[in-house]
Image (tube, rainbow, N blue to C red; front, side, top):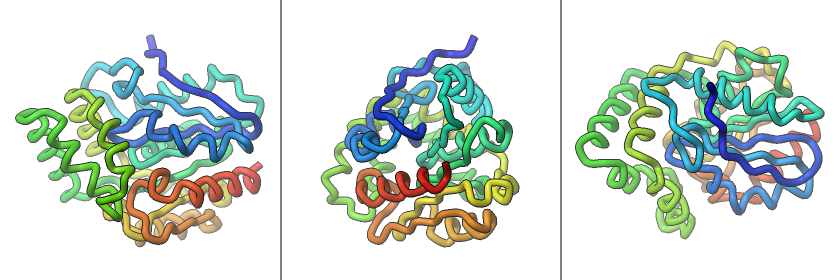
Length: 255
């Protein structure tokens, strides 16, 4: 039986689903949703194991997570094909959904995320993170992870992200690290999306560099590409108005 996902839904209009990233919950969107909900029907959710959603039995894959989210989306009975937008890890989930169930969705939004699989170096870093959390617990890992996601580590929203990250159980941190490490390359699915791909990138994002985002935009040919100046990996907190404008504009174009 698929676990029931905790979610919130607000606003009216074209349906958009925001899927959070690693060591986040739907609370990461708390101040961002009001910028969208006057224009859009916005759903946020907690991925399995995060926030108030029950965890999966380990080991699990990104595709298994995507199947659970897809079943949840079906249960909402949207009157139009929804647009899922994923931040970082959430983008991996979105790409898995649209690659395997393309007829269910209007396209995809990648919010500081990538369609490419982990490099060997990145895989090794995932393994180191798993070992570190197994030895020391999640909190010191969160302390080292979150501030580096921001272009300006003194940004007062760093504390917001840390407080959300601290809620993540150790097993969720390690389980998703392994799932991300082992996820397949989804870049081959980008050409099929063409006009129906939104890419939001941070000019100072060290997790998904600008060059990678531009490469994805090229693969999709006519993707809508938004580059945020002075922003790292956390655009919804670092430049919320610009991100909201990009999403609202894309949703109107994409209908």
